[in-house]
Image 1 (tube, rainbow, N blue to C red):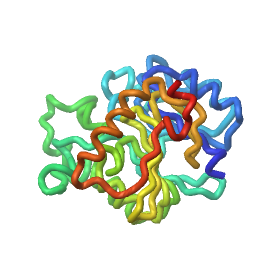
Image 2 (image 1 turned 90 degrees about the vertical axis):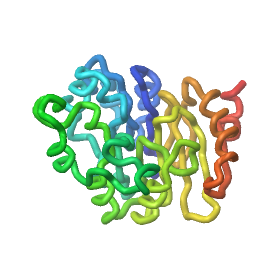
Image 3 (image 1 turned 30 degrees about the vertical axis):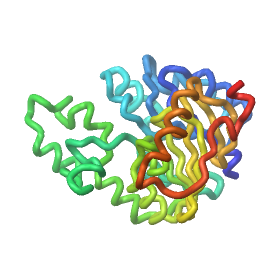
Image 4 (image 1 turned 30 degrees about the horizontal axis):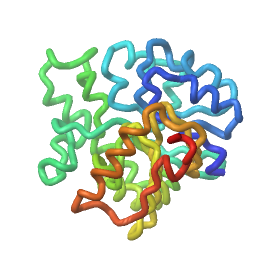
Amino acid sequence: MLDRIYIAGDPHGRFDPLNAAAADRPAAMLMLGDFDLDTALEVAVADARRKCDLWWIHGNHDVDRPAYYRNLFESSLRERCFSARVIEIGGVRFAGLGGVFQARIWHPHNDGGRPRYLTRAEYLAAVPPHERWLGGLPRKARAAIFWEDYEALWQQQADVLVTHEAPACHPYGFAVLDDLAEAMGAHTIIHGHHHVTYTYRYRNRPLTVHGVGLAGVRTAAGRVLTPGLDEERGTFELELQLPQRDDRPAGELLTINDLMPHAAS
């Protein structure tokens, strides 16, 4: 079943690859955020929507402009957001965690890993009225990962954790996502954000990670359908910087060159 569920990497305005991949009529397609929507989501993914079930999480750039925010969070597909939720597709449970860590709210590498604010309500109470957007959270803060969502997922069970941020096997990743996946019983983490296609098989944890490239498409089983549009830089960072990290998790790294050799030629 995992091979019949497609994962679409950050489109950043490029929707042709995911719409084309949907021609295979997969069981579902999960989209990893950073849409950069100049039109409503249902318009941008209209071809894919006609052929398969669509779900999404948000990224950090989906709040960059008011139009980006409205075209996503106020679209007719707004109920298809599964961030901070667990959904089941063909008997497989997918947990979603959209957004990114923000230092003013919670950044696992700062303050000993402790969140500065646990909930949105707590943070909003500390925000001056002139910094609020539409009477609520500042627009950029709406892409933050809040502890309340992390904690809520921790109490649930899933087979696959789908995130925008990367786990610890990426040079810019976070071990708290590995911890969350294990607590939920997940065997796989799938993420976007860094625009690189790779697979990492942990040696000391029962986890496999699949990164998805810029506008790329993979299956939830890890098969590469469409490589990302700019794999070279992301692959270089992985191969160069990951070995330099003292806290890197032990495991096997497979880059696009291993997964889809002809893509690099």
